[in-house]
Image (cartoon, rainbow, N blue to C red):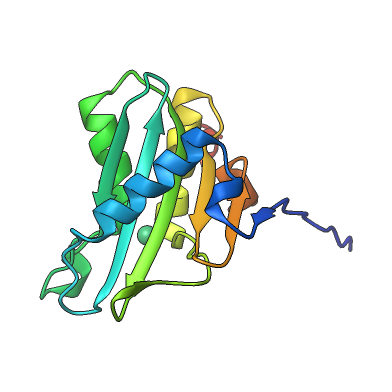
Length: 161
Ligand SMILES: [Zn+2]
């Protein structure tokens, strides 16, 4: 038997003003699009903004449905739209924000497991790490690759074994 440890490196900031101009703009886009989410059931409005290598920023927000599983998270709405519109352009970063009861959350909200898996596939597809910016009002957490949040992962290499 062998026990191993996996270390996740997270960079924390107390204010969005400490981020680079590019990351601040991405967070601004994520917050802006959270206001347009369709979340009548959870009333939990999530906004995601994706930075592409060509300079484009793609926004996405959660889209709920009365048949609950038919809805989709903000992160996947943004990533899938980015990949649909610019299929040959790598993704550099994604910023994620959430609001409920009329204000943005103080603590950063991480992506769900399914969104982590999709971000992982996107990293592998473009062979470029995706910086993940989790933005709360009182704390911002950044990881330099989605692999930090999904260290033991399933990918296409396993399909070939
Ligand atoms: Zn998700």
